[in-house]
Length: 262
Ligand code: DGL
Image 1 (cartoon, rainbow, N blue to C red):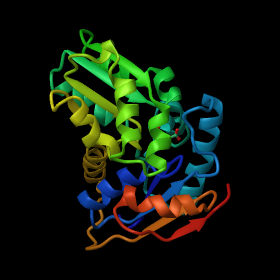
Image 2: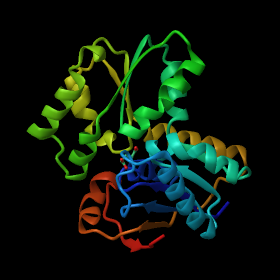
Image 3: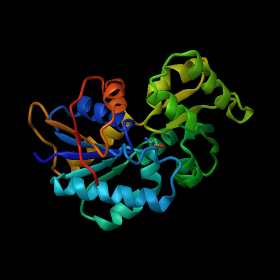
């Protein structure tokens, strides 16, 4: 129960998930790993993403983690199945399934998804949503520029507004009931995207849903920690000034970084 949860992402994006876990499960400790050396994952091949995800998981397991949260949509799309196969007895969560289940439960007719190129190409959200409801209309688009904008801290700027408009004004995104933010960087743009849709489309992000699912799974396996306050460790594969600077935007507070090359 007292063991930490391992959380990983290609870089900073997964800190949005770590922050939600801290909010919902304040007694849990976690070890976060951001693969800054290999970020972004969104333009890499499936084999490469699986190799990186596997190495990070080995590192987290060597640190005695009781569960792993893949806090990256790209790694969730391409490496989840392989990690589950390698570690059948370990609770492993991806960020796609809780979101697909939640969105489908809202009984929408038309759903949009924005994500990295690799996630979009994998069609993971479409597959998961259509497994639940075969009648859904689903439109998606790769929006890699939004990742860079968020990393640069260009939030609520002319450039972020213009990029959101450029990607989302496509006719296929008209009359959406829900838009899935299929990248853990995008919750930072949620308000701007909601404004673009004039509040008429439900913009769904993953962090709170993933944290809720984690709580359910840990409870079900009797692994919930009853401590008052968790301990947090943050590792990156390459320490960069940029990561330290922007991490606060994602996690909500300053963090101390350790470097671990894999
Ligand atoms: N955090 C990654 C995701 O959720 C996006 C960034 C990347 O391309 O590495 O897909």
